[in-house]
Length: 110
Image (cartoon, rainbow, N blue to C red; front, side, top):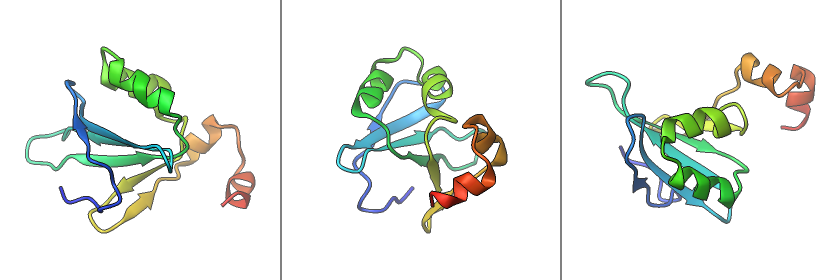
């Protein structure tokens, strides 16, 4: 998968769910490349924003990368998915309700 030059080199990790990870300390972006869910599919890369470096370091040390993502990253940080042409922000109402923000509050900050 061809990623933009602005993405740091992703490091392979041992996991049944996550293929590789990378971190941009200046922008505080965490990049996670997930393994394909089905044979023949491409892996997907997500960019999580405002992630502290300590979270990235804990993620690297976690015995289960997938469980760490579910417990500490997913639904806790804004994210975008790499489409091959650009980053597509994901804005699911379910995720917004988890953060206890109304649609109006959410879009005011954008």
